[in-house]
Image (cartoon, rainbow, N blue to C red; front, side, top):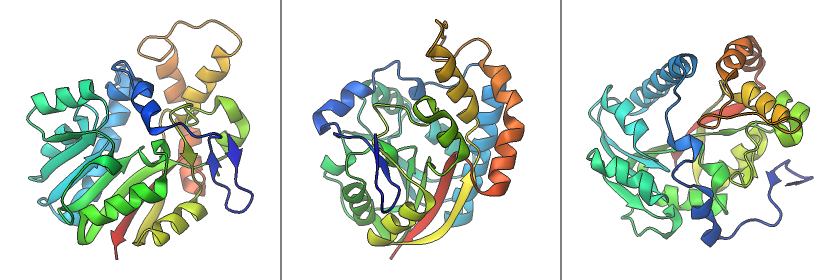
Length: 267
């Protein structure tokens, strides 16, 4: 990884090619699965509710939503409990897309940038932990801008390299996630990117990455001892989640948490 001296963007050198990306996301990829521990499931339910409430504030309970990188359709299941939105997604993993399609959700398989989708079709495009995975964020956001209706919303969440845990853990940082994370942002360069891509920033807030410290510690421990993992997590992982919750709350209050959530509006 390298860092831009001007804006602070952290990025892979050299970046992967488009043809490499599908191989980074096998069917067993952890982010395609739902947490199994009670603690993780409860934390996920809380974040699901907060995000659904954000969508309701922006759109009400109807409208057309595109989830870029929708996986197996978990987010569609969440939204369906809160409103009557028309939902669609994109996904590069055929296996995960097949699960969402089997649930009845329309999913376009392939890279967003390569898909021939009609312009100005969506009221909201969601990119949850997606922007850091793309080879060219500018191209991706330009495509999103084209797909949104005038005044439509972009809702995204992405890691924040200005947080203290990135500087503490470095190559063991839980949100580094190589080789899948290609670009990592800070608040300043993310604002600039959105502005140059035709979006007016509505709000940038710092959110809790409930797995942040726990995953960083797991990565550090794995570097010097053999640890058995189940679904990508060690046995004591739920205890780490609970133990570091106070750190997460303090980080959020200080505006230096591991994750940034943004909503922006198409100009």
